[in-house]
Image 1 (cartoon, rainbow, N blue to C red):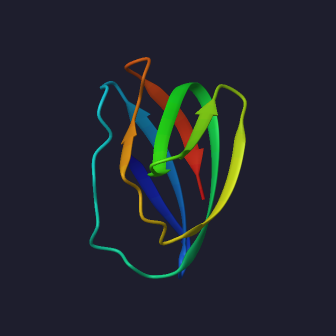
Image 2: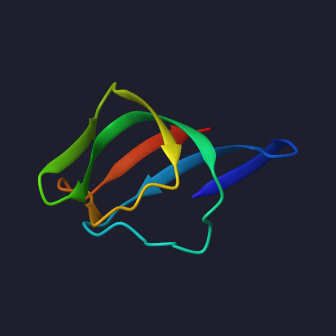
Amino acid sequence: MYSIDVYPGIQVIYNDFHCFEAPTDNSNKKCYLEINHCLKGKFECQYDKNYYAYLSQGDLAISFNPIDKMTHSFPLGYYNGVEI
């Protein structure tokens, strides 16, 4: 992950993961808006027992955090994307 602080409270992050399990960080419980664009790869996230979300190549996702994620992973073993 490469992070650039654009303005106070606004970051642009380039995500470049080569793994199957996503890193976990539960330290930030602040409310924030997150915009993700998948350049290549795939991200999978389970929010509860019956709800899954997927982000694949070319997809754009806008979410409000904090959201309790049960599991999250990279099923293809890699993920490249931009996050604001």
